[in-house]
Image 1: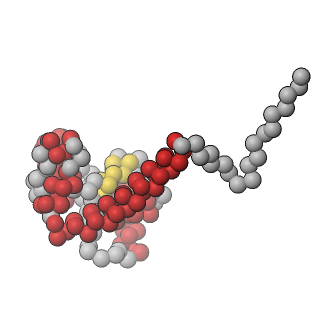
Image 2 (image 1 turned 135 degrees about the vertical axis):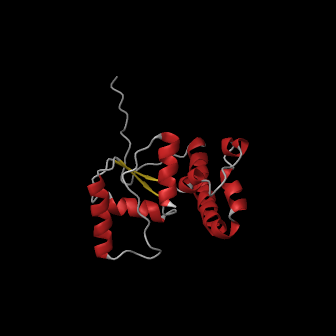
Image 3 (image 1 turned 90 degrees about the horizontal axis):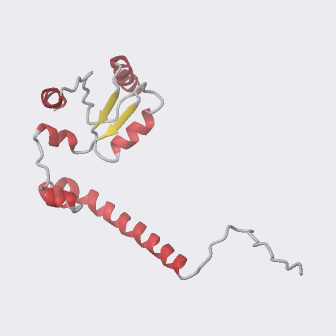
Amino acid sequence: MADSLARAMQDRYGVRVAGTYCPPFRPLTEAEDRQVVDLINSSKADVVWVGLSTPKQETWMHDHRNKLRVPVMFGVGAAFDLNTGRLTQAPRWMRENGLEWLFRLAAEPKRLWRRYLIFFANHVQTSSTKAARHRETRVGTVVRPEGFEPPTLRSEV
């Protein structure tokens, strides 16, 4: 897939691809990891596009941020599949209304249901907490750091 993506990007956009690498479906050994770092650094790439799926790609980029001599790394999710034609993009109206996730879930339910269930549970919890804090703030609750004493006002008349 990486080679077909590289060809597609070169043909469509004139992108100069410095190299591709597809890791095995297992954790890399330390020696293999050093080899990948050396491969990327020797390519002198300006941008590294990482498509390992979420959250694996974010973890990989974080773990390698000080090992790689590249100015920019992007975690791209489904962009590789979209640009090679392996996945169809959601209709414009769905993308513009924040519903691309629903389109993808319908296209790949076995692969994505668990990820979206966990994401939505976390999202609802975070949103509820933020809403509760906002509601408290609106009704006049003042949050002060522990040990904070407001200054007393003195009238010098």
